[in-house]
Length: 169
Image (cartoon, rainbow, N blue to C red; front, top):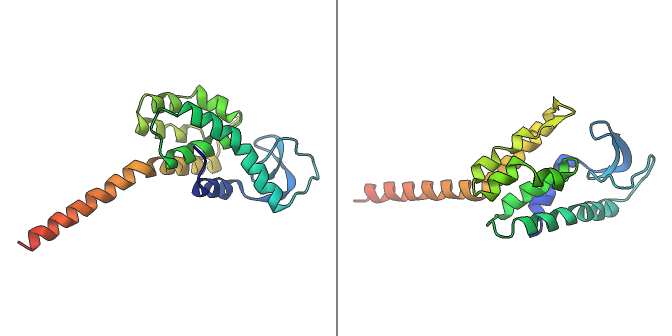
């Protein structure tokens, strides 16, 4: 699988675009573009096009590892996008994901349980970070969007149709 445009836009909205390198005090690393850290130097400046290439390059190994890991798990696009965002944002993302309870629950077919693991990943150096809390809750919502929202919409439609049929009797 590949991240969707919506998933990519989601990550970009949380990362924010910075064309000049800055010191990320939480990550303790020089950062540029949309959260790119590999090889970034103090004072470095890039174009928006370079930032776009960096984020695609940074996501490629995440997409590859998640696709291989989840090949037999019937994962939806929304779930995949949420997992890409999660792995992109945490230090050693794929490694952390591979040993996480989130993954164990997902692999066991407990998608709601897996979704409920996202909010647990909101700490930096043991401190709850409001920005991470917002992001994890948004990732959880995206992850759940695929099946639960669709099912809820279908149930409402059937309820309305049933009500209309009763009124017309």
